[in-house]
Image 1 (cartoon, rainbow, N blue to C red):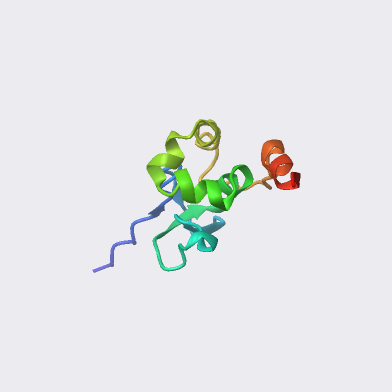
Image 2 (tube, helix red, strand yellow):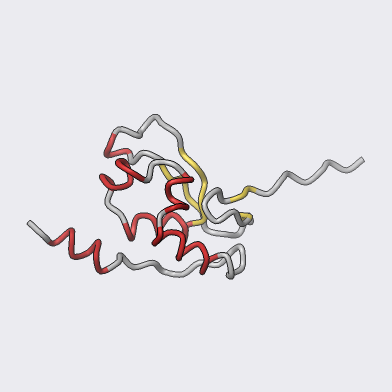
Length: 108
């Protein structure tokens, strides 16, 4: 008798499968720099993970986006999710920091 194939890993953010060939990474729900070293992590598509960190600082993530529901409810992430859900499960593209985040990092 043949063993059943393992269930595919599902990205909790975009809710698409993460195939073995896809880029993925662990996301600390509370950033490590903000005390989340030993707290929960989730496996995300790399593009989903990059989208979070391109838009928000570690402090902002810790303050208001430290769970999947909060991330999905965020308008910028929601727009990203609507777009990425139209892509293949193993889709990856370089992600640049948003202008607002870049400008905020340059302020004294």
